[in-house]
Each structure stands twice: as C-alpha cells, then as structure tokens.
Amino acid sequence: MRLWHGGEFNVDCKWLEDFLALSQHGNYSQAAAQRHITQPALSRRIKALEEVLGVPLFDRTTTPVTLTRYGERFEPYARNVLSTLTEARHELSAMTPATDNTLVMVSLHTLSVNILPDMINYLRQSEPQLNFTVNASIQGIDNHFNALIDRQIDLLVTYDLPSAQPGLEIAGGLKRSLWRYERFIPVISAQLADTLDDPQALIPWLCYSDYTFVRRIIEPAEQRVRPRLKKVFESGLSETIREMVLRHMGMAWLPESMVAEELVNQQVIHCWPENADLICEIPVVVWANLDDQRAVMQRCWEKLLRF
Image 1 (tube, rainbow, N blue to C red):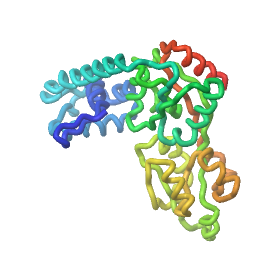
Image 2 (image 1 turned 60 degrees about the vertical axis):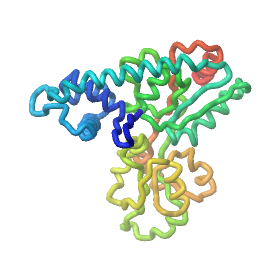
Image 3 (image 1 turned 45 degrees about the vertical axis):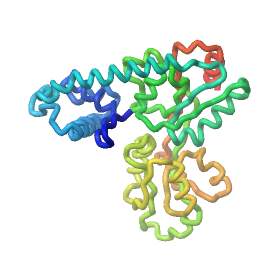
Image 4 (image 1 turned 180 degrees about the vertical axis):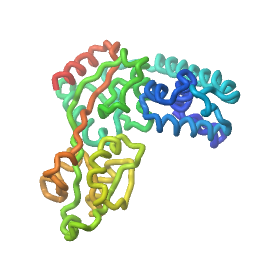
C-alpha cells in the first residue's frame, strides 16, 4: 500500500515496516531477515524513505546503526500510521460478510494466466455452485499474507520462494498446500532460430525486470549463458515477453505451460534442451487461513491436498 498526499508524497507501507525493523535491531542483516528480504533490498527501501522525507533517519557511522534525531521523531509517526491502517483493515474486513459460494483468490500475474484456470476448473468439478473472484498481484507479497490473516482473501497462489514467505508473526495462522511444479524453459521462435546460423553470434534476449519474482527464479540459469545473450527487451509480464517471442523478437525463459501448444506445433522450440541446468523448476503453492472453518473452504482445501 502506498500513501499519497497532494500527488507527491509517495511512501510504501513496507518502507515503514522496514524502518521499524532496522530501528529495533540496529543491524541490516537481522532486520532484513525479519522482513524476509535481502540486505541490499532493505538498504534501498530505507534510502527511498529517507529521500521522500528529505532527512537521514539513521546514523550509519555507528555500530549498531542508531536513529538520528529525525529518526527518533519519525518513529512514533510510523508506528501510528501502521497501527491505524491495521485497525482500518480489520474494521473493513469485519464489514464484509463471508459468503459460502464465493472464494476470493490472489496470485502473481503470471500464475493468473496459466495456473489459476486449471485450479479453478479442478475445484469446480466437485463444487459447481462455487464462484471465484481472482485478482492478479499488484502489491507486495507481505500485504497479501496480511490480507489472508484478516480474511480479506481466501486463497493466495504463489511460487514457493524464500522471498515469498509470511512473516514469523503471522505464519502460525496460515496453512499451505503444494499445487504443482512449474518449469521455466528457454524458448525461441522457430523462425528466428532458423536465422541464427553463426554459433558465435549474440542471441537477442527478452528479459524480465529485476523486481519480478520470475527474474529471481531464472537468474541462475540466465547467468550460465549470459555471454551469448544480448538484451533487446525488458518487461515485468510473462504474457508480454511471450508475445515478443511469438513475434520473433528474441529468446526468453517462459513457463512451459504458457507455451505448451506452441512447443507441440513447433512454432517455438526449446533452446539447449540437453542442458538441464538451464531449466528452472519451482513449486507453486496455495496459502489459506488456518482458522477459516467455512464448510466450502474445508472441502476445497481437502481437494487441494489430494491433487
């Protein structure tokens, strides 16, 4: 969630939580571990918050890191903002009645395209009366875990990554189930591949933006062939990159399920299929609230466990 004032003041609530974590620990690595992010990511967020506020919040010349006088003044405001938003979220959640025939699902955008349709179809086989509301993820993963705890959503579908785990303070209130494994494979259109006769020539590369979950998944594989690649396009959406592949603009790593039909009809081909190190397999998991005792949720969860 971002806070705006006059179209200029733009602060992500995660930055406030990062600020409080670093204030508590005085150590970047410990604060990053608490926030389930990398130390460089925590440092970038803290600096972004300081840039928005226009003042240094921490004295980095000391060990442990300490608050400046600006940070000391800001700390109670940060706590109050987060407390107020949490209270508002709880109140609004209580105003929204849970229904027995609608499940609200949130997922990463890539999963909403090629994974959720299969999951919904699977659940509807035994629950034909069930309706689904699906929202692609546009907020931080920690916000979605909080929404699960607050019963604002019913199911969260995500990749099982260290950076996509609930905070320790709420993990005990959630449960998860493995849905399937997704493979990201390097692909290229057959038409473009036919034009790449020189084995030493650089291959046009369609890459994911640094901030995306997918980039974290496939980066080790990318690095293995990075000297062969020339970046020509970048996007945060798998669907956009897929369309660029089909338009013969370059090669890219894509979910195998997203190009299954094109692989069968040989419109696209699997690059370096003999090299298993270039295939990235990642679990797809479903999260739910441990205390959601609605009968329909219990039946759906049991079915997910049996998949």
